[in-house]
Image (cartoon, rainbow, N blue to C red; front, side):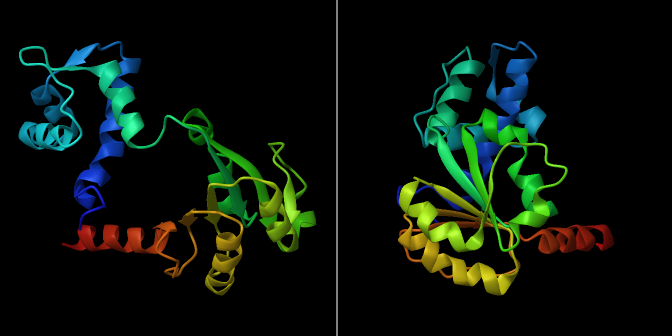
Length: 209
């Protein structure tokens, strides 16, 4: 499966992992690394690393390897992390709040601007952040007045499917879907689904085989 630049899905899926490992190397004060050394840390072959990075320009120097800080920055650009994204979280239950309050998002430019829930009043106690919780009935008007790039959906499947037209009309082009359903969206919208039960079943399979 290729994206519109001819990059395979497998390569795209590896880029965040490179970014994470390079970030860890920077925290350790490591300035440069060879593809062989990176290979040993990531359990990816050195040739695979070079092939992946060459699709985006290479970034390495013969006899030197990769400058860790430079490669980290360039992969961040490839992943679109050189800009800020405005997010809303639809749902205000435990999963939604855990996702919305994860501090790693803020560090990478993902700003949670608001939560939406059918019963916002029941979520006002024991709050640890200042992000407002709105009634779901206010979603359409909110989207008219605010630029939102990504909607995080953490509601039941039926409700999630009904949200897609509202988000589309509001100019949202990215959906991070935690609902237990596959969403049908227009071609110009992008969905990344996280099905927690499927991940757990994959783990179960590996434990038993």
